[in-house]
Length: 375
Image 1 (spheres, helix red, strand yellow):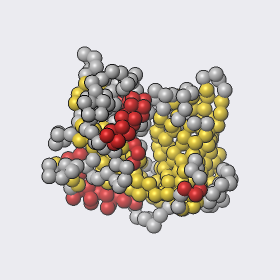
Image 2 (tube, helix red, strand yellow):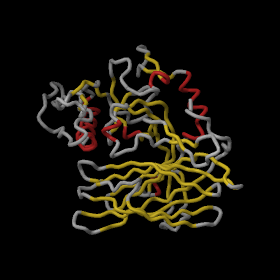
Image 3 (cartoon, rainbow, N blue to C red):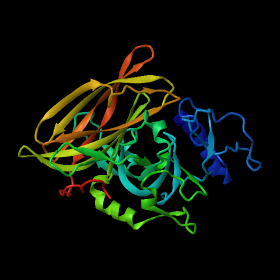
């Protein structure tokens, strides 16, 4: 599985790469079904004696078997600053190829970090623990996913997770832009390519143009800048919440989607993206979810169910992560959500993993989202 190969192989290689300042070709997400051990013997770089991997990608749908295709050359990770529009990358967890459209600056509320390490505070008003949580600024990116990789990651990460409210009478109607994602700075493994169209996505050439005099050589078209400005209220990422229980880390990102009128009342909508990561060695499986949803109108709703989005994902060293998005609506402009996921170990025992509490806040943008495809 790419997640395993990338997490254990590419990240360690990237760390060594930055220390030695030497250009290496590295392994790009290999066999999405079974994985490939990046520690197998490979030719060594004559400068720093690190394995020099050919950066390739396995296309599992080919009937003749495994086919390796060149992708590009790995670049140094940015320890400071941010990646620019047009930066090609591999996702360090899910292994897909992508390209950066533009950055977002979010407040990360990490309940695993001591309060002294952060700058902004957010009190816990949900009853889900009593400690004050500090937030610090963190960079995320709006990115396009290469459509060739979507079939390989669809069981571990939704590729149609960025949704919008449709602008018509059906207050529950949603539509999605396939292959659009949010990526944290540390999930970016940058690379470069000599191809003028290195990413396959229907919006690539509508949003970006090839400019060999720039680095990276892909610059934003006016259509990308106009799309970002027009859809900023529904794309904006502001708060990220993270908490770890028994080596299972839960990250939540809420997004305000807008307000609709239904049966003479206002209905406010949010989507939330959740990533589950197994940071340990034990194989576990998500069995149940338990949500508590509080609305400013005074209602408290409890939701229980099997799995999430119809799945009960297994998290292991080989496939350590699962990511999905869902939606919630309230008849009030704000509220809170928190809860637990119930996991099962291989011996049949169960344990609860806390979902960090997060706020559901509407914003000043009360106008309706654009009609149809948001361009």
